[in-house]
Length: 126
Image (cartoon, rainbow, N blue to C red):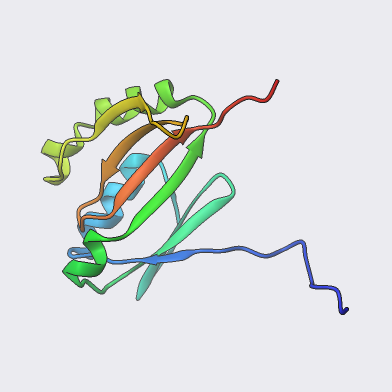
């Protein structure tokens, strides 16, 4: 069996935008680092990221979900509340952290294109 190269791989999803400029501002406000701005915009945070593209299809956007795992969901939630995303970006109101039936505490944020973000708190191992 031939070994698979390993060590520098990075996976990034492509996300839709209805309004490219508005979505870029949304993600910067949320706390992502924008590392490229051109025909697409690349955002990173921690060890993950995504590519924002100038393309929108309602069915796709409404069925796209992303997950971001954080160490301190309460701190993230306080940050999200301060942003007043609903007013600033005309998005659905974020949903406060709650324990989900599958055992993960999650808050929910919807971006300007309708992409649903699950912001989950990492569980500590004993």
